[in-house]
Amino acid sequence: MLDKERGLYIAHCANGALSITGKMANRHGLIAGATGTGKTVTLQVMAETFCQAGVPCFMADMKGDLSGISQVGKMSGFIEKRLPEFGIENPEFQSCPVRFFDVFGEQGHPMRATISQMGPQLLSRLMQLNETQDGVLNIVFRIADERGLLLIDLKDLRSMLDWVSKNAKEYTTKYGNISTATVGAIQRALLQLENQGADKFFGEPSFDIYDLMQTEDGKGVMNVLAADKLMMQPKLYSTFLLWLLSELYSTLPEVGDMELPKLVFFFDEAHMLFDGTSKALLDKIEQVIRLIRSKGVGIYFITQSPTDIPESILGQLGNRVQHALRAYTPKDQKAVKTAADTFRANPAFKTDEAIMNLETGEALVSFLDAKGAPAVVERAKILFPLSQIGAVTEGQRLDIIKQSRIYGKYDTPIDRESAFEVLMAEADRQLAEQEQQQAEIDIPQPEVKAEKKKPGIMGKVGKAILTAITSTLAAILGSYVSDKVTGKKTKSRTSSTGRVVKNATSAATRTITKELTRDILGNLIK
Image (cartoon, rainbow, N blue to C red; front, side, top):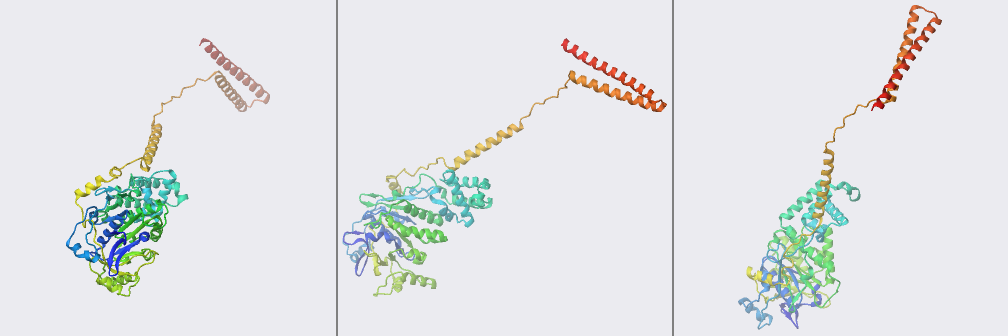
């Protein structure tokens, strides 16, 4: 409840009003307590107080109860009984301007992000990849970036993984081994993610975070995320909110400490953010939480026990509201003591005992003072909401969605050319080239019959000479053998051999002459 004198009036104790100092609202906070102790009502009171001060808020609605902040509240016996405790006579019940969002696009405006915006680190957490698989996923993102391929939705990432797997040899030397088995494991994780409905979250148009920081009639808009279905997928829920925080951190400019924050971010079921989170990612979360306050954003975690939050982050949560805790087991008792130790002690009561004896609507409260120091813890009663407590009807929700200024901006998905289309076109081109090459190989070639070449003149002359020489040698050899057998003298043998050679030469000459005459006459006749 906004009060000109009290500021962001949240609770009331024996010493008076307890308010959040506007300049310290971006120093983050914690709302803790067991189930049924009033955490959701406290969140609603805080949110509508920021709303009245002109500060927009973002909150996840686990059961639909927070949707009632869009409707005017009304008097009840419980509220009437508590009016004197707060010094209020006539409360001005009012509603807050609300925009409903839904990752799945069923109960509000869709909220989408591209694969590239999510990045390999958050995707790896979302798919619960091991170190090797995380390394390959980083390589895939790097290659896509180098080739100028847009990774927008799941089919883009799936096609990119397939392409890298098929061309792994090209990148092994530069980036390291990319095994088919590892790529297959990532593909299976993507399939599980798709079965959980994540395919509706990844895509375009991607969400513009400046749509979370708007006002209407001087009031901050309450951005309510329908999370009843999203809660069934804890990793998707926590990773989505972590992405949203990262986007705020990377996009918003530095503004330092302002009179009031630009945006207050309520992170319900905060323990999911830290369950199974790697050391590297935890360090990043811590960095975002530590530095985002300088961007004018306050983060308030809602969980059952302060022990759900890592100590390095718990130490940054200055504005605290602790509802009752139950100590049935030694572990519960330890949690109570831890919660008590996070407060600046009040000599009027024992903090650990008070935590176990708080009634519904009561809490231990400690806000930062104007100098940023935590105030002494007080046992206080949380204010009642001025808006409706409980869920709205489906008809009311639909009317609010249709009347929203951003109605139609995100409702129709866009599927522009990205990695999937580019790689498909390249695969089709390569296939067409292979088919063309194969077709050229398979074309039957015409048979060429060997033509019997008729020998030319010189060929025939050569043949005639060869025949004549052969005949002459045969004649000489025959004559020599004959002389040996008959025992003729050398002179006679020589004379005889000479006659044979002479006769053979004459015969060869005649043969050559015949061949030349025949060919010349043949050419003349042609």
